[in-house]
Length: 329
Image (tube, rainbow, N blue to C red):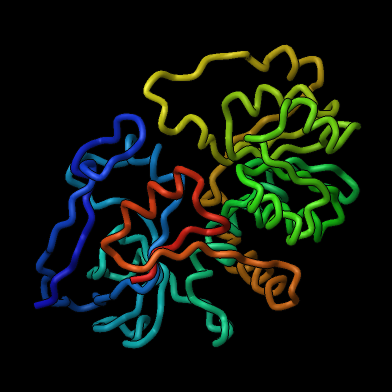
């Protein structure tokens, strides 16, 4: 009998998450039925979306949601041979019994010298999110200027690099000098620390005096209120996240963007990468191609130990990570 360690949501978050909101439990897993597999987590993802999704997609006592790279250790399903690796949606757990419907095999062309953890980062969901936000939502064109906030995170860092690949000017905002230095390493044209600039409005204007064609929005709140004033006419905004509001106990209010959107004739669209799931294999292939060519760099912030899942998640929400936050079991 195999035992699984699992982290459950003991109590819905009230404001910023705390240790007592999580509980580590042990489950006895059943023997495999025909068509089932047993997988063992190798890398687990912590992502900002887990904070708002926990409220609308989870009940107290549920296993924390999330994806993981796992190794097949027992199999009654020929599609998933023992020793193969998959990306699964088992959440925060060390072992999972699955019928295979929620498992995606690692692409066969995955290079042996590339860590499988990148299947949770720049070559996985965050990378897919970056591509679809740029291509499907923004329709970013060569020569345009893109602003991306939370630019040193898992999604933002890929957004900026893809925009550069497409021949665009890229301005990134991040929350520390180390993160700004990282953005410069990635080839961002302009980057600044929003926490230390005297005026966000002036920093944005200095970085791009002519304004912005596109905004890839990860932050929300007051940042958006300032940035939207500097959009060009017919500008486009892809709303991927709103991390500045996730832990609010009282919703933020105004100023409201409607008049600016009318006068500048702006387009704003929220999205999730799952809308284009049918394109994932082709898109992942392109991401891997850019990575192998050296055009896409993927920084990771790795925490070791399954018992540190809550700490890694809370660190992510504090902005402690540069690049993709991952837990290695």
